[in-house]
Image (cartoon, rainbow, N blue to C red; front, side):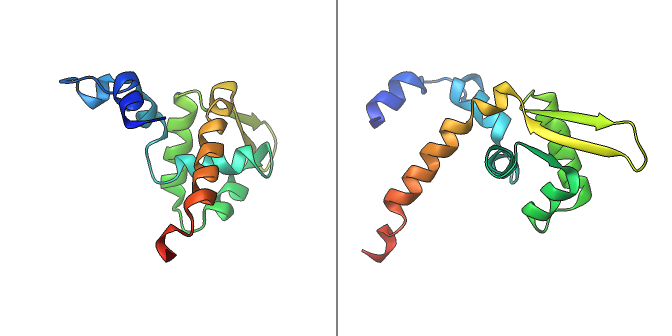
Length: 121
C-alpha cells in the first residue's frame, strides 16, 4: 500500500483524525496494553485467566489491567466469562470482533521480520 493509497482511503483533507476510519480503529486499540492483550489471546491460549494475562504483561498494575480489560469488553473486543464458584474464576477470550484484528497483528509481525535489521545497515 503506497502513501497515495493510504491518503485516498484513510485521510481526508481537513478532516479531524478522530472522525476517520483510522481514528476509530486507533481508538479501539490505542493504549499501552491492548494490542499486547490481543496478541496473547490470539496466540498462546484462546482463553486466559486474569492472573495469566497479568503474568504475560509483566509490570502492569491491577487497576490498569482491570480498566483495560473493561474497556476492551465494552468495545466488544474480548469476552469475559465469570464462573460462579469460590474462589471466583474469570476467563477472557477474543470476540469475533477482536479476532478480526489478528490480520493487523500478523502484518505487524511480517513488517518486523522484514525490517528488524534495518538499523544495522
